[in-house]
Image (cartoon, rainbow, N blue to C red; front, side, top):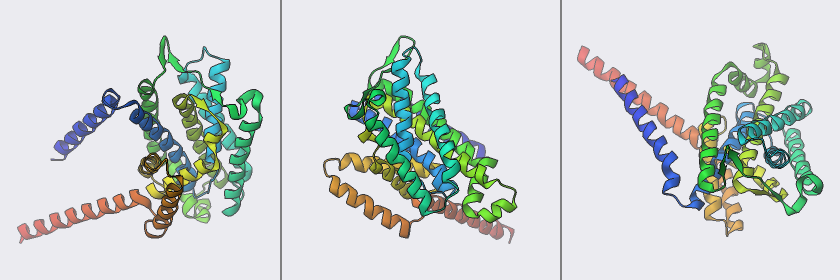
Length: 330
C-alpha cells in the first residue's frame, strides 16, 4: 500500500510540475511576470528565514542584499557582455554572500533591537549608494539591464524568462530544504532555541550566526540578479525600506523557520500587492493588521497551522489503526 501511495504521489507531483512548466503557453504575459516575481520573492524570503526563522536574528535590511545582487548583475552584464547568465548569477550571489559574511562579523555580536537597527542602516546605506554613485549605478535614472542569453538564444520576454527563473528557484528551494535538514541547519535551530545549550553542544555561535547571515545574503543576492533580468530596468526605489518590511511580513505570515512558509508568504503578499496596487493605503492597512493577527494568534504562521493539522491527522489515523487492531485481537 505504501509503495502504491508513494507511486501515486510521484505521478501527481510530476503532473503538477509539468503543468506548471507549460503554464506560460496559456497564461498572459502579465501573469507569467507575476510568477517570476513570486519565485524571486520566495528566494529572498527563504534567505531571510535562514537568519530570522532558523537562527533567531532580526534583519530589517534584506532589500540591500537584493540591490547588491541586482546592480552587480546589471553592471557585470554591461561591462562583460560575453559572460552568460549562469556565470553572472552565482557571482552575484557570492558577492552578496561575501558582503553579508563581512557585515555579519560585527553586527551579529549585537543583540535584538540593535541588530535590527544595524541591518536597517545597512539597507538605507546601500540604497543611498545606488542613488548617489551615478557613474556606476546611473542614480535615479535607473540602469538598463542587458538581457540574459545562452548561445544565440536571448531571454527577452517574460515567457522566456520563466524558463530561466523557475529552474533556478526550484534548485535553490530544494537546496534550502536540504541545508536545514543537515548538521548546519540543526546548528542554526540550536542557536535560535538557546545559545547556552548550543555552546554546551560544542556549536560555534559566531560561526553559525555569520554563516547563516552569509547564506541568507547569497539567496537574496542571487534573487537580485534574477530580479534585474526580469524587470530589465532597476532604480534605487526598487530596494526601499518598504521592500525589506514586505519580506519580514512574508515570513511572519507564511511561517518563520519554514521553507514552505517562505513560499506561502511570498505568494500571499505578492498577490495582495497586485490586487491592491492602486490602493496603497488599504494595502498597508491590511499588511499591518495581518502582521498583528498572525503574531498574536498564529505565531508559527500558515505553515505552522498546516504542520499542526497534518500531525493531528496522522495521530488520528494511528489511533484508529490501533483501535481496529485491538478490536480484531479481542
